[in-house]
Length: 235
Image 1 (cartoon, rainbow, N blue to C red):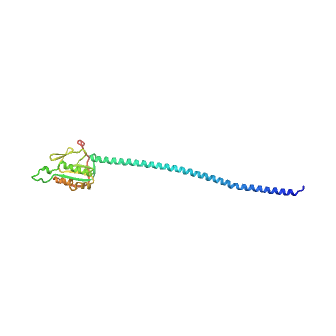
Image 2: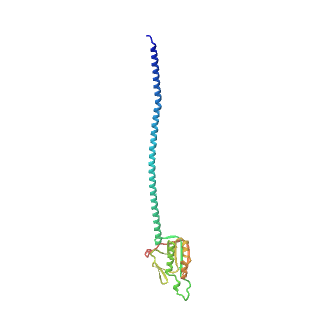
Image 3: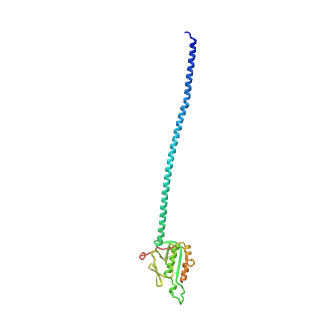
């Protein structure tokens, strides 16, 4: 068979066209890989971003929950502290009340004041004007209480809120117990404060001296006062 020129040209054209198609397909295939890789990377980053946002939301919720728990704990701690303060104050008040009522023994620093009848009585004076009376003892007790004495005893007899003092001739009766001069009034409290109070100019000591009562005041480092005993308690 004789090959004509037109056949050669057509074959060349077809061969060139086939080459172009093959090259275009190869180029298209090569360009599709980066796009596919880019799409995959974008999905990974998007998932990661969504996870971060979700975790941030969870953290915010946990932070708010923690804040509420801490606030509740602070409220409970403050309430407990208030209960403890009230309990402490109640116990302290009860202790003071027991001391003032003479229900318990008390030990501590304090002061001792001794009242005695005058040693010298002028011939032209009545002896009653030179002895210790119940009002003298009561005046000292009142001054000590006002000054802050925690507990008081007279000749060892504990004074309480129901105590009474009265004169019976030359003696003084305290809650039914008779006492003779000298009368030693012992008080527990801040010794310096009690001492200053009774020795003020024009105060209790000066008034007693004017009434011809001999007075001695002494600060004490250790004072022990027994509790108050009613009649029959010691039996």
